[in-house]
Length: 516
Image (cartoon, rainbow, N blue to C red; front, top):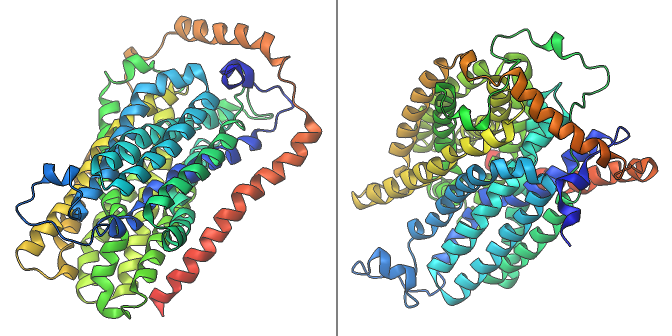
């Protein structure tokens, strides 16, 4: 029954148009990207009962309580757990994905992410925090990991001439998912309540991600774009012409330096995203009418998502010309200055400036994610880049704890000291800036991989020959219907493009209130 999901069944022939693959990736990434918009649920989840828990109620008691409300730090753990399982599942299943293919991984991601949200709806209905952690955190997190890595190595192979652009397209939707999902979630919460909203969105995402999974195709072994001459692209010593096996990559210092670079860059940005809406409400509440501050805060979250998606395309594409190392040097140096400036802007109620600072930060956060697969392909070659990328994403797991928990617990500590809520995030921003300084140093240390770690020509040819012999007989069974493809290509781009355009329009409309 599941033969249609197998990698053998999706090998493209020469008539296939590679521009069919990015929309398939966007179907999936626009769905799982809603993880960046889950801060809209925190205010609702912390007032389901209507009674605050007494200080004597412990953290473990709150996991199972049905008599009092959870703390915000309790529910924010859901986001952290999801990111942890994203990284763990990406590392665990990355090598399997290379063999099973992106369609099977994408379909599994649809079931896990959508099903996880449905489990979360039960947790909200019965006021069981452990069910919410299990649903969106564990099961949903596995879906995030599978969905996130499913298109990366595929698009790098379809676009070897523009690795940065390819990875930018591959995960652009992950940055824009919240831009579409947050307004949808707000609307559904207002109409049906938070528990029902989780269930409805879970159903929507199962359908959209399944459509994306069935749109994936993989190139035949040895395929190259017509007219592309790879020898002319090897001008940089940081772009290797050799390949490193996934089982060897973690033995190189370059892997761990890149691991640290990703972890530190993500820790800084993810902390802001995890608490975007409530943070803005507390910092900017004196500058807006209490009746509209919630809507404006949602607009702030949507603008952050817009910056995230723009950064993934802009910085990843720019890295094709700047180089990956220089691009990351910009992220860390400029990011440090911006994080140090954010408390000043918030303290003085320069809200428009505060928003602009965070928007630029989020472009570099998204750009870091989109650039890292191309960085890996440059350093380790493309033969095992998908599996290596999956293992590197364990850095995201740690960052998913460091960033959100740093901001959440430091906020509660600051409030306990009597510091006003609008100033409770200042120390967090300064600590996040220090993380970026360390990231800058790690990035400077990255050098080309020692040739002793490279795959030998015999090893590489053996792998490629096995794949070539296996696929030559299968291509004939997957003939492309060119006429149908010519119809589906613009339709596919419209289907993903219209929600993105509407999300951008909605984000800009709500965001403009901030600058008035």
